[in-house]
Length: 400
Ligand code: AMP
Image (cartoon, rainbow, N blue to C red; front, side, top):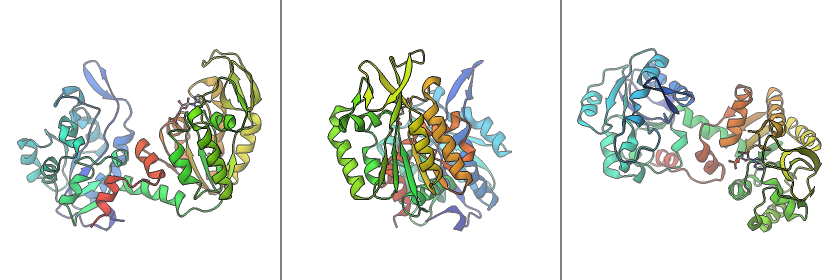
């Protein structure tokens, strides 16, 4: 892997694609960053370059500006906070391909950091325009990609630009860690390997499940998608979330898993509600005996203790998707207990990867993110990587 550790940055300008797409809100006429996780995640790469004699030019997108420049989406709002985190003043480069920016980056002194303005002020960024990518490439002597969140997009600054650095293109620390953690689960895992897949819909997780049954020992299926499997097997699921178009697919997955000796753990009991609401009436029942008018919104105690046994005796764990409607207090328990089991397994030496949108939100909500091995920063990118797809930004750096 082409990583920054093996590269000499002495006297070089590193053009780093970061993911500074942070949430902002307006307070007293100022834009305030409400969650700086993505900025902090890029600091190790930036500091590495600075500590090894280089200078840094940072480029990122922020939000979805529609028609060119708009103050609301300017990265200027990040300058002060980024300077505080780095302990030195970051220079704002302005328009990412404007004359002023090139003026600054062409004479960049060693140890300095410049932040260019939002790449998406140009539609050429998302269309993957070659001319735009070439202009951007003039800001640096070496290209480093540290933006995992956009690695599944063939944008100008994520993939196309790499062609202009045939011998000087590298994975940043964050991107390298993301790749290594998925590879560890899929290809170099200590057994038993358990994948926990939950969330709302089977349709959005099919590709991942099909990939996972090639490499795991146990597949736990929870969340809303479990009811499609239960219905496919002839169970009564009341008004639970079901994708009727996927009943056949669900049965095929169960059959394939059996052929590959993968144990599938489906819920055996469920917390049901008479409305999709935290104020609903609730009770517990067997998952295949849900009365009409009731819906399953969480896994219940027998299932939880079954899952706890599987998870705590696993050596490698991947978690993607909550076990129930964890956003509501009444249906949070299954997801909380699964999260705690993953923490327990990790404390006993297992490698645990939390990958994909809502399980990341859940582990953060329960304040357990620092008690698992790795929490992915890239939602869509992580899902596509788990599905076995080639991510354009990764391919662009790997290619010769
Ligand atoms: P996903 O983005 O596919 O991982 O889905 C996450 C969403 O699935 C969360 O917002 C959960 O509230 C929701 N979810 C989990 N379990 C259920 C369920 N039993 N019924 C409906 N929605 C669910």
